Length: 200
Image (cartoon, rainbow, N blue to C red; front, side, top):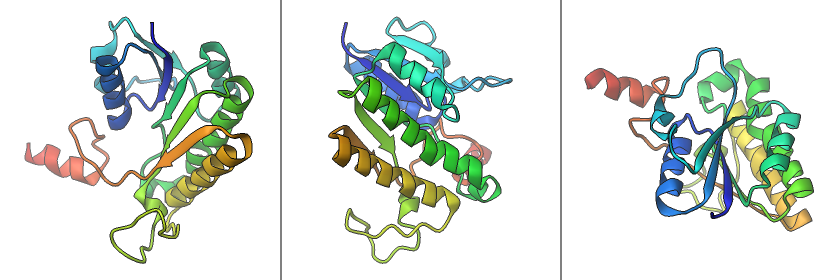
């Protein structure tokens, strides 16, 4: 058996595709985390339920103890975080929830990795919203962070936390910049999916 990888956000577009990719291209055990909901939203992962190397577990990003317990139990070699409150407009309605999910949760993950799985390699999904009011195009690593929403600010906060933990504790921790990307697994709450779904 290969290594252990925790992937969050597996009911979303990116998380579900990542699990598919890892199952196809590695021999690793994949632990996919979901938060407990009264109504399940598992359409994107129904095809994974009988995969031997895939295990679905409950973990709530708003609960530091839940994150800690998951990391202690599985001692992951890799942790890929795609979970987020990812609606920019929604971040204005729920700024505290957005900050807690997109920034505080990253801090809780990094702390648990530092304490209980320091060799774990951590990836956090960032966003082009960190650039916000852009100065030049295309953006690159030198572009200043100029968020224009609570969502963008939370992703900037997470980016700084990732850097601080990497530099202070010598953890393998990185954050990517994800620009808009579309697919059939993207939620219908996004405008592009509403349009393409309506046309289809």
